[in-house]
Structures are given as C-alpha cells and as structure tokens.
Amino acid sequence: MEFAELIRTGQAQAELLRGPEEPPLRGTLCITGHHLMLSPGPQATPDLWLLLLRNVDSIEKRVAGDSGTITLRCKDLRVLQLDIEGVEATLDIARSIEALSSLESVITSFPFFYRPKGLRLGDAWHFHPPECYYKRVARETNAWRLSEANEDFSLCPSYPRAVIVPRAVDDSALARSARFRQGGRFPVLSYYHAPSGTVLLRAGQPLTGPQKRRCSEDEDLLRAVLAGARPGARGFIVDTRSPQAAKQARMTGGGTEAKAAYPGWKRLHRPLETGRPLQESFVRLVEACGDLEQSMDRWLNRLESCRWLSHVKETLSTACLAAQSMEQEGACVLVHGAEGTDSTLLITSLAQLILDPLSRTMAGFQELIEREWIQAGHPFQLRCAHSAFSHARPKHEAPTFLLFLDCVWQLGRQFPLSLEFGEGMLLALFDHAYASPFGTFLCNNEKERCLCEVRTRTHSLWSGLSQPKEQRKLRNPLYVPNPLAIWPSAEPQSLRLWQGLFLRGTRPPEPSEVAWEKVWQIVTDQEKTEGSQPTDSASEAGP
Image 1 (cartoon, rainbow, N blue to C red):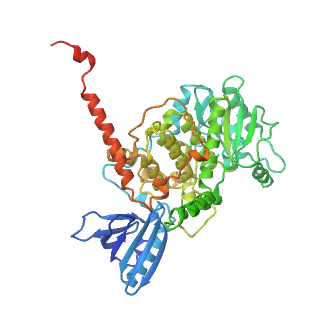
Image 2: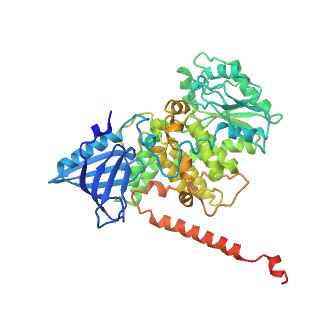
Image 3: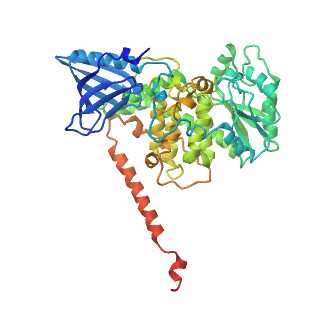
C-alpha cells in the first residue's frame, strides 16, 4: 500500500490554534505519509510546524458555510484546532488524517524512515544490554549467572535473549519452569541489593490450575534463590492481585504458589488495578482536567471519583513494601500478577528507584527503563495504541507506563535533590511511548523487535536524548547524589496531581519552562563564581 492512496488532498489554507496564550498560526497545510505540516506565509515566522500523525488520538470535524474546523486531540494530551478554507478540503483532510493515523503496520511507521542529522543507525542500541547489568551483579556475588537459554525466544517470547538466573539452576530446569509459568515467564533476577545481599525477582503466575499442579524445577529455582542469598534468608511473594482474583485465576488454569511447595516463601497480596479499570481512570481524569467551567466542588469530586491518585498511592505503597522487605527485613522478593508484564514491572522498577542510587542518575534511569520495561516485555504497542481521547476502548490498552512515570514524578517532588533527571525527562518518555520518531518503544517484546529489525533500521531514543541541546531540558540542575534509599510518603496529603502533564493542554507551559531555565542559570552562575575564586593555599602563597 502506498501512502499516496490515503492522501485525499495535497494542501489547503488553514489557521492553527495550538493552545492557551499561544498566537494562532496561519499558512499552507500539507499532509505527508507520516506528518501534518503547516508552512506559515512569507510575512510570518519561517519555522515549519509539524505534527506526527501517529500522535493523533481522535479527530472531530465540523463544517459551516464555505469553511470547516478540525479538532485534533493528541496522545500527548494536547488539543489542536484547525480552521480550514473550503468544505471539501476540510473533509478530505479529516479523512486523510483518520486513515494515516490509524495504520497498524510497524515497519511502515515513521521510525523506519526517520534519519536525523548527527545520528547514525545503531548508535545507543548497545547502551543497556542485559550483560551490562549482569557484570554489576557478578562483582557482588557469584550466586547468579547469565543464561542464554532463551536465545531463540523459544522459552519465553517476552523475555530478552539473555536473563540472570541462579547459578545452581541449569537451562533444562529453566525450560520446565517456563512451561509452568504464564507466558513462559519463569522467575528471573530483576535487581540485586548488595547492602543486604537480597534479590528482587519477577515472573508470571504459576499455572497450578484447579488440580493444583506443581513443578519441582520451579520449586527448586526459588529454593536456590534463598540458598544464594545471605544465611537464613526468607522470601516474600508479592502478588499484585487480590486473593479473590488469584483464586478465580486458578479456576482458569492460573494460580498461586502453594505454601507447602515453596518453604521459606510467604505470599502477600497487594491488589493493583490494570487493564480497562486503569484506562477508564485515566480517561476520566483527563476529562476532568479539560473542563474549565466546573466549580471547585465539582472538580474535587471528579478528581476523587476517577481514582487516579488512589492508583498512585497503592502503587507507591506496594513498591515501598517490596523495597522495605529487602533492605530492612533482609528478605528476597518475587513479584508477579497474572501475566507479569504490567503491575509486576511497575513494582520492580519503582522498588529499584527507592533503593538504588544508580537508578536515580540519568544513565541509570535510562538503563532501568530499557531493562525493566522494554527488554522485560511490557507490550507498549498494545498498551499505548491510544491515549485518553480515543472513542475506541480495546481491552488491551492501559496507561501502566504512565502510572510508573507519575509515581516517579511524585518521588522527584518529595526528593527534589535526589533524581538527576527532571520533569522534562518524564514528559519526554510519556510522549515517545505513545508516538515517537525513534524505535525504542516499538512492538511488544524483544522477539517482535528482532523480527522487525528495529535495532538495525531505526534510531534509539537514548541516542536522541543524549544530544547536548536536549540535556538541559532533561536534567535536574539541583541534583546531589544521595547514597541512601529514599522512602516516599504515599499518604493522600503527600500526593499531588501532575500538573505539568495533565494540565498541559489547558495552561501555557512557558512559566514552568522559564522557571526551570532560571534555576539552571543560577546554578551555572554559582559554579562559575566558585570556579573563579582562588583557593586558600593560592591566596596565602607568596610572590
């Protein structure tokens, strides 16, 4: 199929309204296979306005007289309005946008055509391989090894080729454990906590079923985890489902670890919403944030009823439980829900941010995203197919990654000096997860990325974000390395609405951006002043 077949009109004259306090932009509107472009007239600014069509979440069109209006609600939560000359041109442009923004083919998406200046294909894809983290673990303990049993993705299509597993467990045992776990997701190491000698693991649910099946290799694997930790170590299994949901799962082939089969492990249920309930919460929150006519009582009622901050609270509380079990109780922790690709990754990644100072650096945070979300098999293509405005409501969509970013934002607000990255980094990750010129968030797992040749045919987001002009927008100018764990408060009065994201379509961004730049300027000036002052020894030295 050619893109030209879906473009019904070449160009039209239009006026673009981009948001509050931004002047309208008038010029020639054009459509390409991947972009909507508006070129201002010769009297205006020479900059070309571009919108990646993949960013369009919903489109509304209205015609009146000899003109029309198209309202574009974008996946990044911005709302754009196009006033177009000509009824036929309006309808043709609307149909073209609808067709081009909903293409499902991965290999025809824009990342496969994006070739920015200064970047080379293949750059930064090698920044965060599993082998890199394994080397850090190997420096602390020899109880773990890097297994390539999943080299051809035959054990688990949603795991990477190499995973970290107990040294005492061979690859044949891993294969049998994989057959006993949902989606083949046998327990693998997520994080090694050196101060306590304990580990954080993730997996899919065990397939015990109504007959309460067992798998000796799976039991041996978790027994080896405790044996490789400090003497007398015990373990907690944090199940992100309610006891009732876990019981229902057993009736359909899933289940939980039987207490008698896994000595030394204790199961804790900490239910977290996923799937459609989480998506509906996101939609209701965005709807409430976009209503500028409501009263204070109405706003507070809608904020409470959407339950988004309740999801943030429950997620942070569960992450703190996992982190506390490791650092303060010296226990190993296994996290799983049903599939192990959503709430499981939410908890394992947040627990690492709480405990691990390296994860709070710019490079460490990028590695965390790569290792715990992308390589760990979060299905980005399914979960982020639509944002909050689409009228379609497929059951596989859920803003799980957004919930993670919101929790990280709460951490940064409560500990403003402890994260090397700032809000700009979190906003960039949200934007790129839903629509991006880079290939990092394409597909649902590593197997699909290999089949589509994503790593050799697209650019990595990490390469784009490492450019010097981007760093100032992403880094926290107040960052001071903190070697300690950071324990966030999950009390309701401690949590805030992430205004920089959820209100970005209703308030101008300039004040916060100006304030951010001012802080950078103050810090830069201070560093120059300190660098220019003579040291004591220099001032006391004679001629």
